[in-house]
Image 1 (cartoon, rainbow, N blue to C red):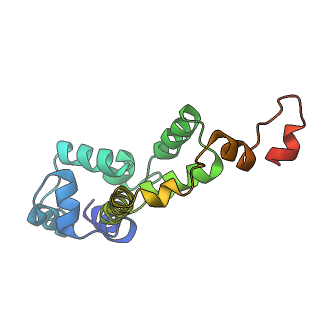
Image 2 (image 1 turned 180 degrees about the vertical axis):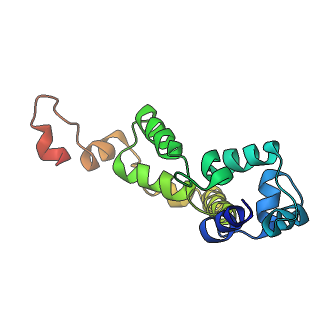
Length: 154
């Protein structure tokens, strides 16, 4: 099991022992002991690893079967169906979820900075909003529900 834990951590998760340990709530030196074979992880730790990283428990314990469980894709598909995500939105969510946690945090901080900048400069958005109903209709004419919408939607 020691080699599988190390392979999972280094090759597939690209994590340090410290980062791996933090994610499952143990100490870095405990991970080192598992990877050197000095100690075997408890059933609780095995469950934590499998739950946190979506690892197939049979693979972790014995080396047989697939390394990862297939459920995240299923969970993402369920989320996409529930929120009617188109393919672009699906890919955005999928790519975000597959980022390392520190990169996810970077994306979140970026959007916070954009939101803060927009709050500081509301004129940037107000320029895009028509000033009168007439301007609105001139820029965005009403759609006739009886017309050929395929022509508009494309």
